[in-house]
Image (tube, rainbow, N blue to C red; front, top):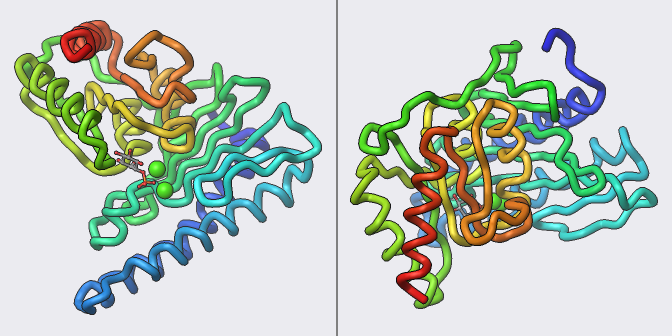
Length: 269
Ligand code: IPD
Ligand code: CA
Ligand code: CA
């Protein structure tokens, strides 16, 4: 992609503006680690501030568009067909602990389809972006492609887990038990959006999570698909942006992972 489209230009500008502020905040977090209270309140404020910056930038550029944001919820614009889906910090716990693995995720959804996605990792200054039908790229125009590994044993598969519900915990552990039998190189990095960007970049081979929100995955789903990978929900292949669960992988192992996770689900039922 030689030149960026107006949509991507707007999204990247918003992500980079918020990213500059978050990098400064991330530096502060280190100082706060030693305090008894920890950096919790400071991070909550940083999260909200970043979302406001992104919101203002995008609204300035597209005044009628709607929003779905992790912190601010739904904001209905004059144009309900176009909505920005935003996670201002994906990987909050990493951010809070001074671990440089978190990102900003912005997607544009138009009439139920994700048309553009930007994932920006400010700590490493890596920017991933995609537009429907145009491919997925790293800043500077390097094309992203999903990996070609097809043997689960040599694949690196990421997952995620949050929540305290005992039933969910049991389901997660059972599924993990089945996954590691075939794919022992499991990872839990703590940012769903970066997990998806890394599949697009061919770094990770697969990723699944059983409880996930649209702002965690909307941009990443497009990145994976535009890089030639596959994404579905775990349960019924409904739209993984809204299904609340997801499996993304290169085309060779997506079916294998899906089979393992579906049979783990049946065993539990
Ligand atoms: C979380 C991260 C994590 C995933 C959780 C998400 P947050 O988002 O993406 O990797 O396992 O399901 O909620 O809270 O850091 O924005
Ligand atoms: Ca998130
Ligand atoms: Ca978040």
